[in-house]
Amino acid sequence: KAGLPEYSLKDVEKHKGNGSRIWVTYKHGVYDITEFIDLHPGGEKIKLAAGGSLEPFWHLYAAHKKPEVYEILETYRIGNFKDAGKVALKDASDPYRFDPDRHPALKRNTEKPFNAESPPELLVDNFITPSSLFFVRNHLPVPEVDMKKYRLVIEVQGKKPISLSLQDLKKKYKKHTITATLQCAGNRRKEMSSQRPVKGLSWTFTAISNAEWSGVLLVDVLKAAGVSLDDPKNCHVQFEGLDKDESNNPYGASVPIEIAMNPFREVLLAYEMNGEDIPTDHGYPVRVICPGIAGARNVKWLSKIVVSPDESPSFWQQRDYKSFSPSIDWDTADFSKSPALQDFPITSAICVPSAGQKIDGEDGEITLKGYAWSGGGRGIMRVDISADGGKTWQVASLQKPGQRPYQEWSWTLWEVDVPIPEGFKGNMELICKAVDSSHNVQPDSVAGIWNLRGLMNNSWHRINVEVN
Ligand code: HEM
Ligand code: MTE
Image (cartoon, rainbow, N blue to C red; front, side, top):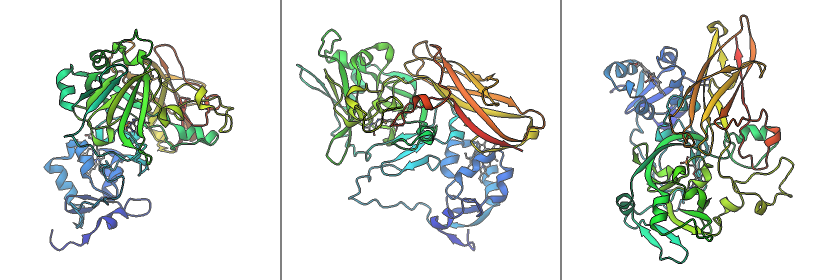
């Protein structure tokens, strides 16, 4: 638009709210939407775009892509965006130069390597997490993958190695699809470290997401490679990624052969996520999906499978992703004696409202939404909610995945309206806890499960909101 001032990305980024006015961009326009926030039919979520582009959000909520909405937006136009279409040039010596662009709504924890949680208020809106909002846990730079050269190598002792291109994998084996939740074993570490400091990324409660994965069953590939459970040398299936550390060691992990070869465990060599090629951050072209098992074993950018008497020699299998008694510290921890984490315990969390949110007491009730999930294929039987510190409980309604018993790889989303007692004002503690199909329950506090790496925190999820 002629006659309007020009603004750069830097100018726009200064307008995220919190004292400043709220600006957004859309294609070549800059908009001051401060006055529109309270009028937005979609509520507070609009603030996620503050100081940046609307496009990635409207891509998710396509209801915006119509003339009426463009007309509303145009009434808030204050300028032209001079950085539209500008691509940041990547430095050829930067090991992170193959990292992709990411959705601005991801809650960034570290940039290099990239680690980010899903935004809780969008997570519970979608039973299947859109790939762009799926949490990301990278230990190393995203690797360069040359598809002309890409081969998945399978090594079995006493046999000739097998080498498969992506096309071979797709052509030779039957396609199999599952819906499975992936969670980082460090999810909710922040709550654990508020009890006593622990080492690791300070994840809140959304290092967890749910997707539909397609690929081939690992058991089919292993059987074709002549692997048998009867051979006592076949104890573990090791996975290697293409991403390497500064000493050229790849990311790696392993699972016991009893899981890898069990057709009911549905371990996948996945090449599709939510119906498309797996996105770069999530392991293109092939990743392992071990449903029900700690995220760390779900190796991305898979290059090699080794059937072995031993677990993966990788740092992340041997010296990390293991748990200890609360009284063990870094001087007394013996990693060689602690087993590697595999199946997850039961967990759940409140995603909406957010901690510290102000609630209007006159509404008479608060709507709570969240997830519940258990490992090993155990489903969710019940989710209990308390608004009085655990004295009384209300049962939430469940959106279950409808999967077969013992193969419930997907999370359950839940929702409940909790009444606000008449005249109540001030701090209200909200708690959720879930029960799985084996009647496993969550511990009521972190104290008894505290461990020096801050792993597997599945205590009752508690948040405080402010009722006025
Ligand atoms: C719904 C306008 C930004 C999330 C709507 C609707 C309008 C609108 C008119 C009603 C659509 C209908 O039902 O026909 C706008 C304008 C925006 C903006 C003018 C920017 C100035 C955003 C952003 C988000 C968002 C950044 C971030 C997630 C939603 C949601 C709904 C909605 C969740 C409810 C409908 C649905 O679930 O698809 N918005 N919006 N909006 N908006 Fe926005
Ligand atoms: N695979 C490779 N090659 N490199 C990694 O850093 N991180 C692991 C696992 N697989 C990792 C990997 C960890 S700890 C988790 S929690 C999951 O990938 C995260 O998967 P996502 O990034 O697709 O959410």
